Amino acid sequence: MMIRAYQPTDKEAVLQLIRLNTPEYFAPAEEAELSLYLDEDSRYYFVVEEDGKIIGAGGINFFPEESLARISRDLIHPDHQGRGIGGKLTQFRIAEIKKRTPVTEVQVRTSQLVYKFYEKQGFEVQNIVKDFWAPDYHLYDMRRSLQQT
Image (cartoon, rainbow, N blue to C red; front, side):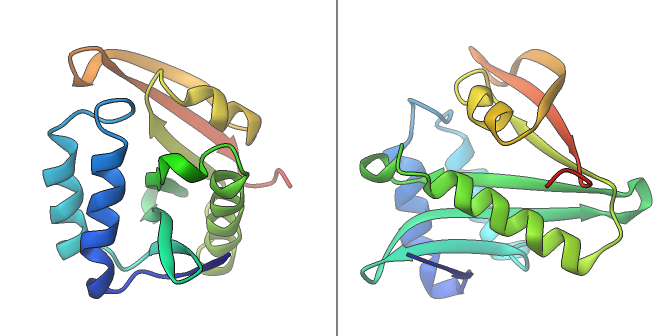
């Protein structure tokens, strides 16, 4: 398994990941949002490769005025979920955040469908907004101090 920077040639493989996770984890409208993000703001987006295939992806957004970084747009191929890949991708991005900016807190905005995964990564729920992403897809705003190991 290797984590590397996203390249524009990876776009279709990443979009396939969201399709494979819709509607179980993502609302259908989120594919168009991801496509736009990949075209316009993928500077800190990463993919996970295994045997030459993309099996995961996730990004970072920086908000230096708030001393905050957000991990975002996390995707793991359904056949590879439960193998620790999401945890490794999360830890990789936290290490990247520490290298690049003097933030004090990391945020993830997720749903009720996977917030427990992020709790295991040290994130705590700060706020819940019902039907934020789409009907029955609630926003779980979660934070973690960057001082945690």
